[in-house]
Length: 111
Image (cartoon, rainbow, N blue to C red):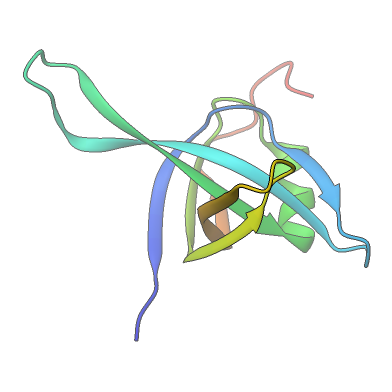
């Protein structure tokens, strides 16, 4: 079986770094990816893809990327679910990033 995702897009907001109880770094990011066509009004269609990146890659993306940064990623789709505070089942589908490439230089004034 194959589960492989390749995307190029822009971060919708600055990534935030978190740590698990065991000390593993991770960041959740959302990437805006243009579709290969426009709608009937000529507007570009965009998908917003939720992703998670782990360990050193999470630290790097948090340090070097900001909202609007262009990135290329490869990874795999993963699903999970949990019960929220109201007892409602919540389902999550996201891309687990295995490799991330920064596709443009860091912008001047970016922290």
